[in-house]
Length: 112
Image 1 (tube, rainbow, N blue to C red):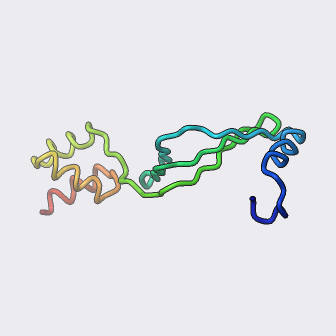
Image 2 (image 1 turned 135 degrees about the horizontal axis):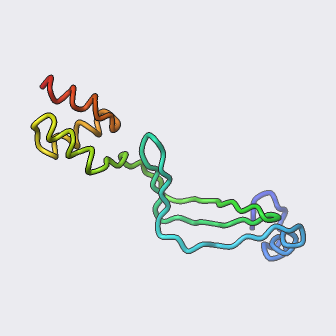
Image 3 (image 1 turned 135 degrees about the vertical axis):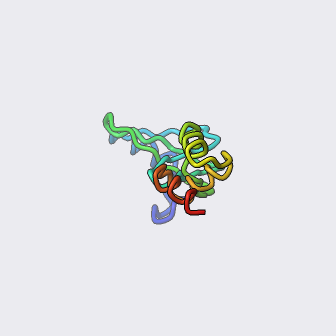
């Protein structure tokens, strides 16, 4: 039963939605990643529903949410490492600390 639907059968609801031009289907997804400028939002064990309403597609996603670190390109790590004469691990750590800002990471490396 769907809350607030007063005992309506989900099959009848889907049939009514289809009559209104709204179709939905479940998507078998393993993981959903939303990339943002500040890092990634990772949804594991997702329940994903695609909703198609008169040609407009949208997705409803539910699941276990965690936030991942912003990915740092390898070339940025190498640049900071070589410029500051520090290890790649330390360079990556500084880039994560500075949200990927190469100049700030180099500046921090040179202060330490």
